[in-house]
Image (cartoon, rainbow, N blue to C red; front, side, top):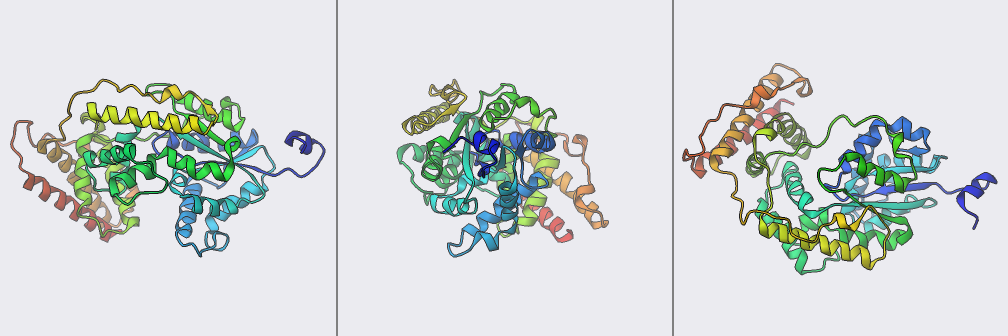
Length: 413
């Protein structure tokens, strides 16, 4: 068959090219998605389409497709109109390529991924998988799980990595720590899902540059896969993900224990949205972050080695360098203590201050998005000094009280 450029020149039909960026989570996906969304028009002019009129269109389309895929009998073409709208745009685009980016796609197993690709029949589909040093992704992925309603401690979450090192996983396991880790970070499993479906020439592995690198370095690598000049994107994204401090995440985990029956819609708006972003993110600069101890560093180095082997065994092309996945454990303390009750109580106080402001705001008939908090509004004076004794019962009651405030706010939405 003649190459694409020649077929296009001769006026022959040319199948559309669609890139599915499937993650993995915590590998710069938010940065890439925000950057491309900000430069949507520039990318279009360069022949690269982002289907959907806004970034949320892709998020909603993928989530709808994944919900339909849970039922083996459901038909995406008729039951997932938001996803199909993205597909139609991509299939009708006459430029160089289209890009659909969502780390949720990395959660799919092979059967569901195959059904998803059926909706793109007639297109030349490529899959992009971004991978990152596990010592950077592990703490962030635990935090993401908590911000989405999770209740596993940091230590238990790390056990999922430990078991993954001992057992090769072909599908998502039943044990919760390992399932959560494999779902979001199981790169070998993801390769086993997508490689048989698109083939090695259409599966692109992009490594994330080491922490501290210019964020633009990741975009340069990603753009190389798309055959787009990196300089096309001239506008920086509006915001980046802010990592919460360890005490804030641990306290939020304890609040989640009291919100297990809350609707996802209300949880995402009030906890993942307001409490995490408007309140706890403002504490990030005054709290220590969750970090790995020596055992954690050994675990992540071994996981990096497992990812490198999986990529090398499949003889996949890599944009970047596998050396970005460091296999020598980084220096770390022998052990890292969890947040003290005194630290948790300070985080609890900030949560109360923010939620009380929101409750009063909603009670007055205002929209939640109209409330703007400053750091001064929620950075309370320390309510406990490090040497003060704060027992577990106080923290449990504080978490319960904050959860009740969340529910009060939900009733006013």
